[in-house]
Length: 374
Image (cartoon, rainbow, N blue to C red):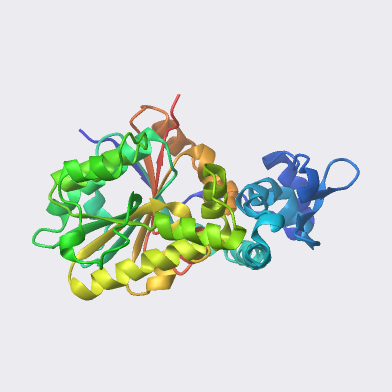
């Protein structure tokens, strides 16, 4: 029997601007030393970020509460200017604009916090999540954004994928994913999809990615899989830019940079537009890291592609503020926390009571939070 606890309100900690800087210290330790990427004042507080050849100053309240997370999500994504030259400068410009946008979202979040709180409901499930109660019936594009490498998250995504044929009977369903290489030399078509487990094994030999179980579950459920990652084209871009054969670390650094994510999402969008043109009535499920699909993310696919969308974030508590630093202000009521910790299988689902424009700030239509791996 399912055990469910639902509340229409979250508790959000919002402080007046004048008192916020001091109150934030109780929520977050001071920003650690950041070597050349941050400028320290007496007492260890970070006043600004070093971005290329300039210093970027954010409001003190933003730096006090969010500096550590913004360093991880933004400043650490800089590219070596000695290797990448003009591309490094372009990447820094994207980081600069993104930090500006976060500051605007921070101000908007605090200005409308009461309205945001009143539109969110929290439910804890110890049995299967009733996705039918959350997903729109006439949905055309479903975005599943995860934190990479966490087994329980991949298992939960697998459960949703397995349920989709029953949730959308009679609909053609495709799973498009970053976790499978694209057929780069061939035009996209229904006959270029992966429909057999042997094809996955051939494309991903000796892979240890936990996400591969989602792909096997899809083909077993009769859902064709389309690889989005154009690895060769990305490698060639790095070679042209750096005049070097990229090492694994170079490939990873560029792939995770702002310019890398923009370029990858642009390439993925080409495949997804072609698929939509060929299958106008299909349900297209995009499975990728949350950094590619979250509404709050730069160059996110829902914004690139337009049309209807529904974004689900799969995460664990430790990664919430990396998914969105604004999650630091949310505190569940005691009953919700107790239910969430009552079972290792408990999942916390946060969703909007009704469609809300504030999803652009928080990043998703639905958030599924699982307990961390021990």
